[in-house]
Image (cartoon, rainbow, N blue to C red; front, side, top):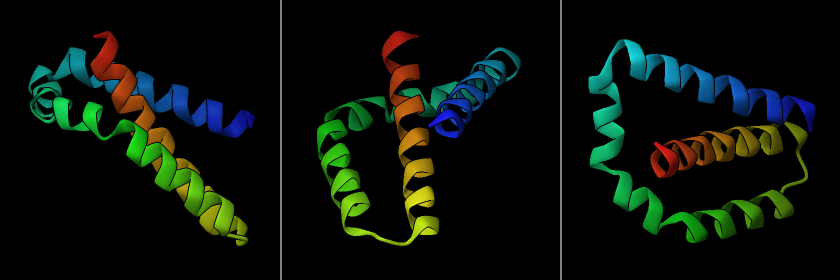
Length: 80
């Protein structure tokens, strides 16, 4: 769990740093922000289902990483 939180915080910090250095990158996320927000619960349910159905630890880690990236983008779009 510590690795997931660390990965989340690192990616969030990277996005915030990138926003301060190159603001046009953040505009890409803003352009598709509404689609990210509308699809949130669908993505959460799909990722949770795939995670529970998978027994392979490597695939579970990949699914967790993808979800953390998605969650970071959602939080960045909602709060900034």
